Image (cartoon, rainbow, N blue to C red; front, side):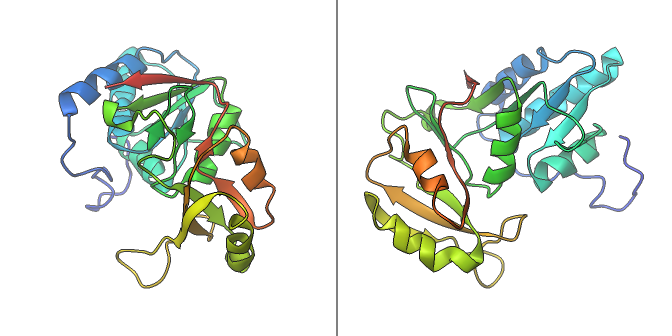
Length: 234
């Protein structure tokens, strides 16, 4: 482990709980790790399967003496990269060759809903910058109709919250809810200091992502439509 700090927080991963379906998820993690080549710059997502993939990739990097750089999509991913000793960079300095991440929902056309963890803006930046992203999911994430199980996260500048909610009423929405924090008072704040609206849409067309992005005050949405992804299912 290449962590200089010796305190307890520095020497433990941010994912410390039980991992459901671990054996199946480990197979997907092992598969992703086989795609790593020397010199790769890899976008690193969050979630339990991504954590296992990062662990396996680091094992390969060390055993084979490869030079690999990670671009984390969240503070969670960044801390795990530090824990495993994988060097990190940012989109300002390098472009990712490929990446891996999870998803909340995936439909039959590989359209995604992401952002339950609140890192949708960074996740989309890294995905859009990569030639391919491997999406690691279990069968429960597959749906026939996008938005069937999960709402769509919408990251909003706090100054525009009322404007955005008003604009959203012109869409076929069932409800708009401000995401509230569980261990602090008030709303969830993203790493960029924005709030998240969880929006239930009656239907999600291919143009909805673009239509929402045109509303002033919306920073990003959890709709990922038309991106170069390959789905790896547990």
